[in-house]
Image (cartoon, rainbow, N blue to C red; front, top):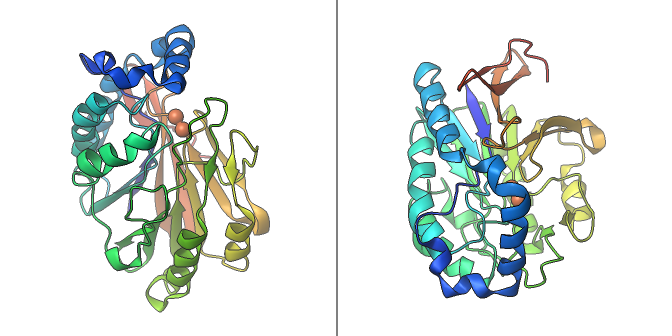
Length: 295
Ligand SMILES: [Fe+2]
Ligand SMILES: [Fe+2]
């Protein structure tokens, strides 16, 4: 079984996206200045990197694809209209199925929720158990989502992105109702019996900085206590790494698929009781697997 995890594509603005009056939202104006000054160059080839991922998937097919969000930049309607399709095409290349969660750039302001529901949710793979979703406040709904990956593994998606007005606050949050629903899922025999339980969200589980990190993590870590079969996946930090959380739970950040000079993804292959994790790297204008194979 092969599982690919990627994140943070940040596709360039589609033609005409910035003519939207919504760009005058103060948070977006400041972000746009920041983007023009610091970021746009680094992600200018994002579509080529996404094409490169498709090329990799044709050469090295995988069974499941997990995506942890940040498809766009400012959550403008044109971005929703144009950006869902290229991501959906990649997700559809998994032989058996895929699961996606939104990033903070996909739920940038209040109106983003409406756009996400309209343009993204219908194109992204549906949960295997829609009844498990609690539709938390401020969320586009549909979370936690779940994908049963054969008899041995399962992926559960949480929405930690929160549309916030102040530009200085880019923190995420795990919602209480969503965490309770996660607890019910983890305790259900159908999930608990599996050897590998991947829990994924956009925000880093271990970064709790008040203004930029993930809030309300204490009940999450309580839920994780004593669960030996959990693997945590996230994006948001645009550098790939593996860390250990409380109790030794592995926490993988996929980095950014498209950041120039740091393009990355993870490829997981559970085998004989252990999880083989390899990095995807961009070399000579194509993705390949890091030959070292050591996370
Ligand atoms: Fe990002
Ligand atoms: Fe992010």
